[in-house]
Length: 243
Image 1 (cartoon, rainbow, N blue to C red):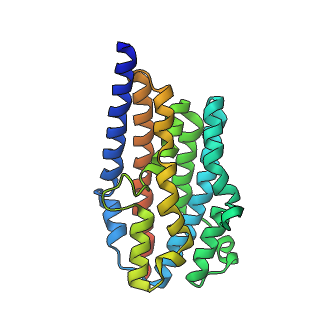
Image 2 (image 1 turned 90 degrees about the horizontal axis):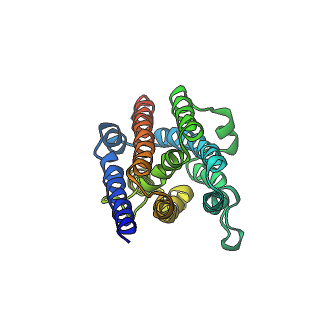
Image 3 (image 1 turned 90 degrees about the vertical axis):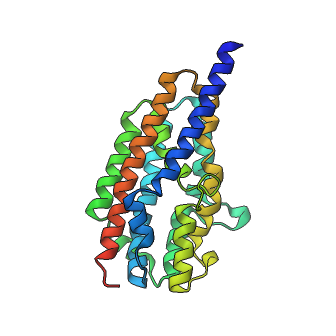
């Protein structure tokens, strides 16, 4: 009984640490720079295209995480990825790549633009770094490296709202595009609340000692370090476009 109680306390402490770390992302210089940069149509077009390349990379990373995870966790990941890859036909929702294209349409982009304009060097480097985490870490750390990005986009745990919501509301204010017409931002502001729970669902079963807790924390920390570089890169390339 004492061992079970210690394990539960360990998981609760892990959850608190992950929430604190997720919120701390928004206090970092790269996040602040991106969220304070004045927006215009061309800047947001660039942001949307590069974010879409990043979205495709998330599918690659989750597939790699799934390959090394225990069977029960593979099923959890499949449930998570199904909406991303298939959409929800019953609700009339497209897959998340198509949502990005639809959001681009509201900005004057065409589907061909997402193929014509490839990932920047910075985008490619960050995506490769995330793939390295997903493929080479212990499965708990690999899972954390991908789940962390869901957690740091969850309205439920972030004091000022998710990145999707914050950017979406800024686009609404500065470009006049209603948040609900930003298909991808609007969807992820809601979907990532549920997706953000996955790490703790897994931790409740598989994190039983400090070593396993530290695998999760390290995977999340490494991923959020890459994310800070990614957000700073987005701010840099957007700032290079005249305001």
